[in-house]
Image (cartoon, rainbow, N blue to C red):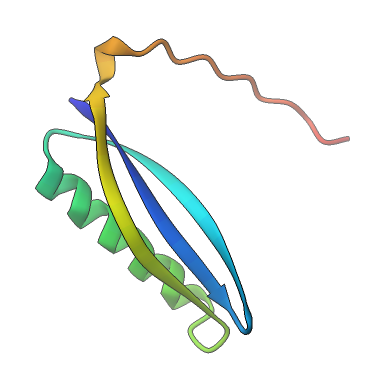
Length: 76
């Protein structure tokens, strides 16, 4: 399994922002399909207001080459 990074542009009126998604997949075609599906899901939430444009999908490396550290914190 490899890690893939997808970059999308979020276009909202006259403003735009970048968003990054990480996927764990077997190969590039699977990652591309997942990224396109994610952009489609996001576009269906606010179809008249916001548009997600997929910019790129990059292959990073095999998942066992990374150490994953994460922490959940409360925003109280």
